[in-house]
Length: 83
Image 1 (tube, rainbow, N blue to C red):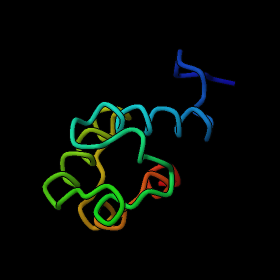
Image 2 (spheres, rainbow, N blue to C red; image 1 turned 180 degrees about the vertical axis):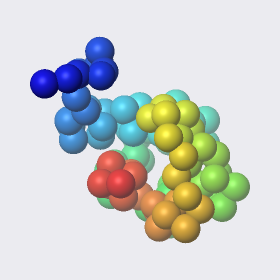
Image 3 (cartoon, rainbow, N blue to C red; image 1 turned 60 degrees about the vertical axis):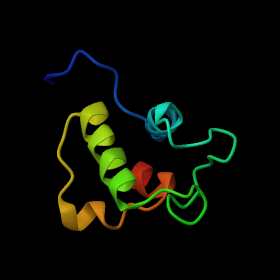
């Protein structure tokens, strides 16, 4: 068995924690209104530019690029966690 990563495997719980932390640190999101089911535009009042910035922050956090076609569908933290 070869293990190419020195990092522990990502669990769903760890992914959720990291996604929510990135979102809580975004200055336009009120952490009190944030939940995994919060809709970025309808519940949190973000616009399309904010959405792009959030996707870019997730790409930086997890180290891979999210194609635009997929990014358009990621409208809630839960969507990002499942992705």
